[in-house]
Image 1 (tube, rainbow, N blue to C red):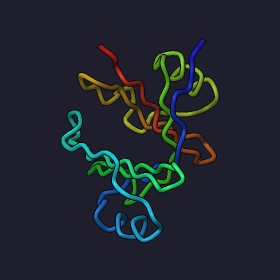
Image 2 (tube, rainbow, N blue to C red; image 1 turned 135 degrees about the vertical axis):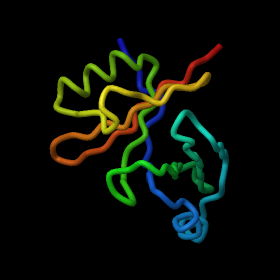
Image 3 (cartoon, helix red, strand yellow; image 1 turned 120 degrees about the vertical axis):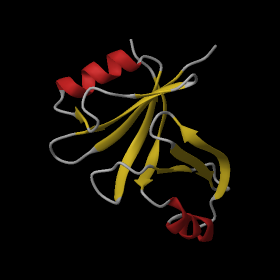
Image 4 (tube, one colour; image 1 turned 180 degrees about the vertical axis):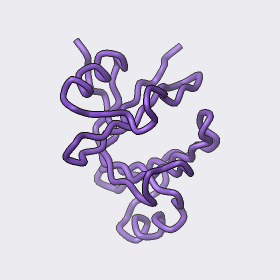
Length: 125
């Protein structure tokens, strides 16, 4: 059975630099940052506040709109989670494609009502 390992808010945008100052003012600090992810060259920033709350801010060029508010959901079984989401009416905004790197697989899934989940499985070696 699939296990959710992370579940937190995420902002996916075409310009992360415009959003970072607000969350820094709210007490969040950059905990982890990675650039050039996958074939889309995504920039990923994980921020955390003193209470341990996290927010992800990701930057990508090819989005259906300038900013998407989402939930990042890391799982231990990408295929099972993908099937569950599509069975519940979610669609992958990139069609059948996912972002694949040596360390993770990801797909941005959107429901008919507009709920957006960035489905991720980290690949452990």
